[in-house]
Length: 218
Image (cartoon, rainbow, N blue to C red):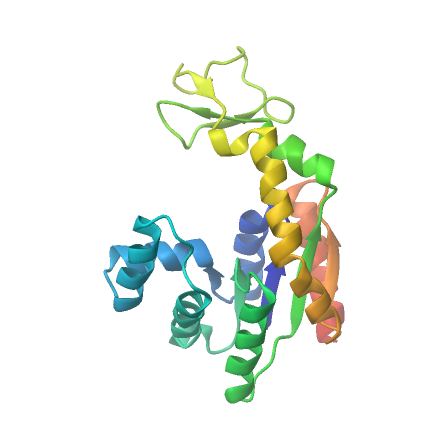
């Protein structure tokens, strides 16, 4: 299957993408991973992307599209893929359609993870990270440390990242609504969008998504 996963920041896209890709035996293609891999391997696209990032500029769509195209042409993606973070806007969605059409392929579904905005803010703004090890992550509501402000694992100080503040989260949501959300209407016009309620346990959301995909594939 060829799937695009969309949803606001804090919807759990990365977690769901990993589970779904494993269940469907297709590669999880994340924009963030693509950028990191191309930059670390110093590919021509990676060097080009880094030149924009070093200047504090947005990487142009054509660079992102080229990276995604190169990844989707790898052998492990021959029977499908799950895209996470691409396309990010309608121009990228149109480019993806053109790419697939040129190979006589098309998307099977666009999974839209639906989370109320207040829940998104609660999820992200409540995160606390250990200064000693960023892999130690807690949450003031869902995974509170035994002692406030102290990591259960190593005793390090817990802090809130600047980009996890409520003000920053609401700004990120505004960017999502302006730039990315329009692709949902774009794909809805192609009858590809499947909305998945993303509240609840991780495995419950995965099960909903798998059931929805099974219906789409039937």
